Image (tube, rainbow, N blue to C red):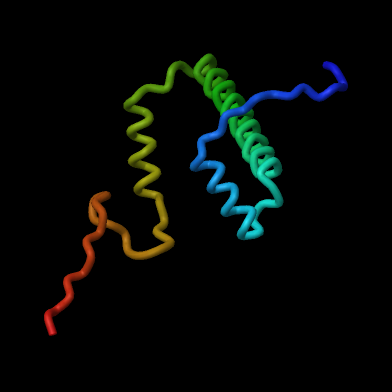
Length: 105
């Protein structure tokens, strides 16, 4: 790889540029370049983790066989049954909770 920096032309969605400008104005980012570099770094890290997860799943399936839809559904049910509600009350059968009705004055 060359020690010289290569200039690239990059097109960015104007809404994202505005989001960056708001982040800079709020002191949440030092510059557009820093904000973009941080986003690219996070994306690269996430992609690396997903590649490792894909490899782990492939290794598991090589050793134990393909994970079936039924096994995934059973695991989702078990996870739901073991879940701990940390905010609010649990919803009834996975349905969103309705807001309480207010009495007219």
